[in-house]
Length: 569
Image (cartoon, rainbow, N blue to C red; front, side, top):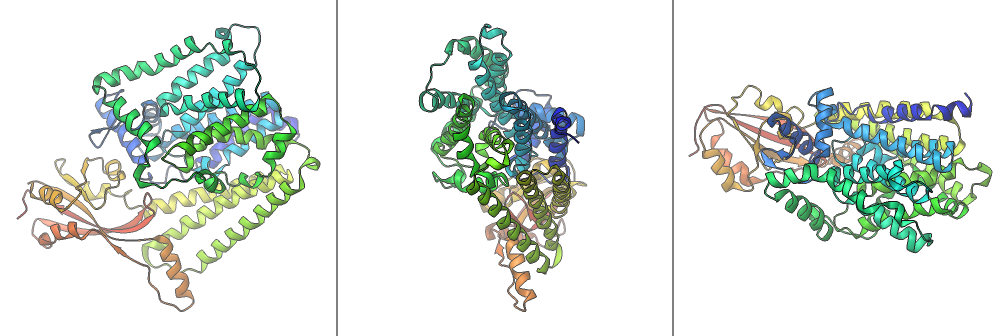
């Protein structure tokens, strides 16, 4: 197998790589609370109403994100049915597009080897492994940012033709319009700030601004957004803009969302996980930037800097927010790996191998601990999820080793580990999911049955049961729900534990120490409202135990069912 043969088939090889990494386990993995089931349910509700404009969740308007992701998920449902795979396939498709565009850019700007390396690095990055399979809006937005940033550089570097005759011009403003429909104005912020950093800080040379055709280009983007946005504003009487932009964009920029903390070093601290395993090559970045400084390298650095500056200044912080920078990082790392090994800096190479050894020792230690641990009951199924996670991480690490020794033959065993691990994770989490089987709680009950979550308010209940739920905030609200006559289901949280406590207790038990896992009781106020109905003729109860993936807690629920019309005392 020659190098030329590999380069000619690079798009097909990268397509196979993306599908092998992202598909295993995706159809089994339960929807992860909270955003996944909200997107998935909102799409289903739009389909049920025949609505293409305003998403709703649990019967209430949902203004968190614009509409593109719901349209894409609707296509996924049409092909694969309403379920986990149908909800997620758009993210896999967007990730595939992201990887292929990265390959194309690397090949066009720096050569075949850089394109192949950059595409493979991006496809096998842990944050992409996670978000590339989730029913969210992130990957379509990241793909649009990539197209916009690449097209912007192509447009500025072109000559001769009028801008409207240049494919890059159409790609730039088309990507901006689609990206806004995916996740709002961030798709504009990254290329604009990147361009300012490039022009005034890093490259500092005059640019042919006229080639951007800003006014007609932005008109195209605005028309794309307005085709949906104007009907949405009319139907919701302006609420979509007020809530979607005011609360979920502007307010999150100035106020920490859901009580999360803030640190200017947050994205540096989360980089070892987000960029795993390629964070091991971090020592190559300053070397390759100095060695190959030109207008394209300056643009990649500006692109990365813009992303990190924007989200470091943003009050709400989540590790995946900086995903728009990852294609540029992959292109820089691809340039480093494609250079002659003899030219690699010794400190960077030593750091990379030290990282490999350290992580290998950590993974072996985790396998040993999990194997020695005794976990009783259903919680023992979590062992499969831990082993599957370790297998995926080991496969990704083996990919880094293959890149360092430049042996293509190591790709196959790495993929086997990732495929087996991904499928094992999905199977184990499906078996332990607390809500994936919640449809059985209401399957045989009348359609008029009201569903109430008291102390347990996971949005996946709405998706898996196919019913609307109410979530009382206190005992008074639950009392009102119970007093209303008619069939009723109430899911209450009895207790919860940290899964790591099971492993700690099980490991200590192996060495003769009996220290049971710590158990945290559910809200007592809700239990007191329902206690008088214990054993009542028109009530029955049953308990459900399982893993709440959204909260990463092992929980025990009590499900109360009132099958006959009645009222409380």
